[in-house]
Length: 135
Image 1 (cartoon, rainbow, N blue to C red):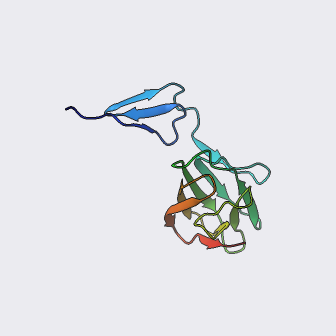
Image 2: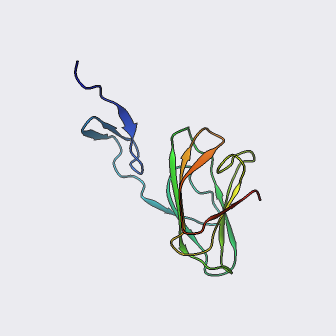
Image 3: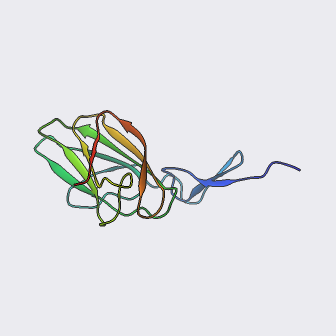
């Protein structure tokens, strides 16, 4: 028996999959790093840069499309007075089963999330001092 090929989506490559030692891409590198804006929802997948240099800001995170999806949030600016908070846009979605708010207060703070389901993220890596809270 030969090796079984397993297809997996590639993070950050829209429409691409990895199968064995081969990469196939139907849409190429369509999306790179999203720059967060407090007026729009952050995508529920991929990489988002957030930050504040003028007071506290709140960013809403769109629903994850499916279990297994990865999301990376990282702060490009911040301080204890200029925080960036991320909350899921939909009630009932949590970062770890309990907490619905992630607060970033320094450049370099980051969260790597993986969707366990369509209502719960798992925190894979918390870099810096991202604080999780219920509200």
